[in-house]
Length: 92
Image 1 (cartoon, rainbow, N blue to C red):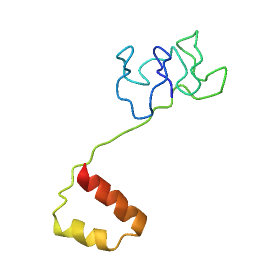
Image 2: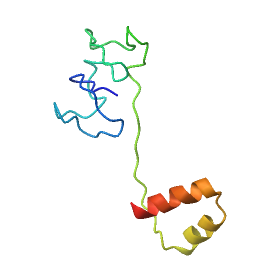
Image 3: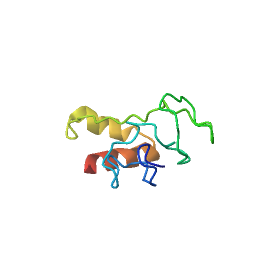
Image 4: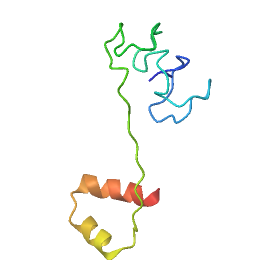
């Protein structure tokens, strides 16, 4: 992924660009998909790769009491892949 403000390569999970300090998707100076410079701040699609420049990734934080009895019961009925996810969530 590329910073949409300065065009430097950043990880998909980057919260603030280490080069310019801007949060991803705040500007449209560069395409976040291919890194191509956009000359019009009103562009809705990258002219190089066709990526929708208005698309935004959404992240959320959910607070759950990991020791609640319903949560433990839920873990018992989950398939293995989801159990691993729940364990990861519990660690975070």
